[in-house]
Length: 143
Image 1 (cartoon, helix red, strand yellow):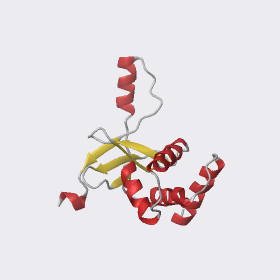
Image 2 (image 1 turned 60 degrees about the horizontal axis):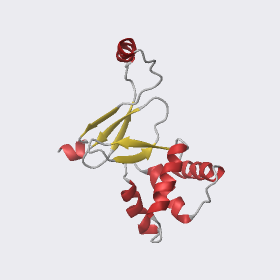
Image 3 (image 1 turned 90 degrees about the vertical axis):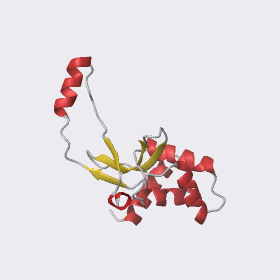
């Protein structure tokens, strides 16, 4: 899907969920739909204020929460205990995240069946889903 089409689809979903489409919300959607980095709410706020100086931090938090509820963005838990947001994965993908610049790569192909079976047997839980995040330095930050 082209970036413009993705942005419009997100805006339609936001509107269908009861949100008015304002210019500040549009700026947040445009940023989150097109970025390749995991962004903190403050980074979203700072970036959005460049185009819309009256953007409020509360609008950023509420919009990110609604986008997460709609499954359009996902929260990424960082090693420092803070969280960031990024475009939700499509299908069964996992994250490789640069701890320095926030660059994100999606990857597939993991086989965690043996691990989940072991966990189920040892705990009695029935594992329904999993989410794998790997942290490191991207090639640019590693050089």
